[in-house]
Length: 341
Picture 1 (tube, rainbow, N blue to C red):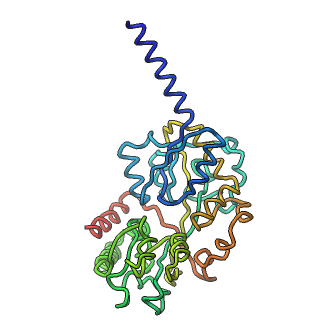
Picture 2: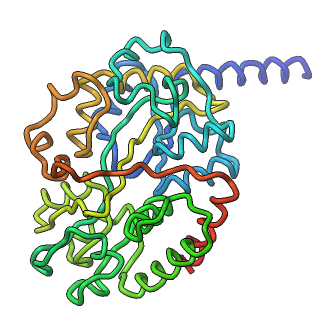
Picture 3: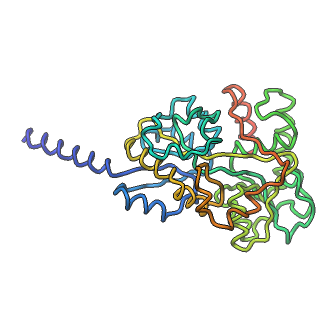
């Protein structure tokens, strides 16, 4: 009987390993990849893909550190979060020769400060975060972040704000003209006080609903990703995306190879698949952002190429969210916790 149990256990282990060889688990932003592309990858490779979603970089990091690292193979963090995850030892590395499409990474997105030489990540999509306004409700000037942080009467109580610490605090800092990673107590107090005062004029916090509340009319203005704004406009909302004079957030989402990935080889295959220009363009055409892959532009739809959300006025400058040192980050965490009370 003991020998029978041992053989049964061995067969079960072998069966589980075989199943694992045909699977991939992805930790991804919401509403951000076309299902048809996932199904194409599955059909081409025989790998079964499971996708779980998160709503913010911070939520993703907390989830992985709480025990989900080792459950997922790849994740899709923003630029500053790649740097944080790399510093905390949450990422595996790969060699360029493991991906036949590695050379398709656009030169400007190759040697990036958050992952020099691309040892842990590949570019996924990049875009901006600012805000959009329903022009049926408000017809005035929208060139300032004051629309969110000190709104006109027409918009008070009708504003949705992203449930994203990095972006809210970065845009708040831009509005006040202070550094993103300051440890100056007076500057931090001014940021905290400004956000608390602004909150009185907001209707909601929501990232995954940022587009929907503009389309439904539940919000007349909202902090939003440029691709979500383009989608809201395509769905009939009379919204205009702003590039405020104080600045806006520029971001790049990246697919990272996670430490202890249970299906590492399949993860590398998926990353290589997404670096194919046609596949990168499929994500862009769906999500309405920009690919970081050379040659993808040949496969982009005309509406994406000419989208006002993807073509900021000359002279308007965006900034990446900065990764603060641990002690400074605690100060910003306290501001965010206070804001969300």
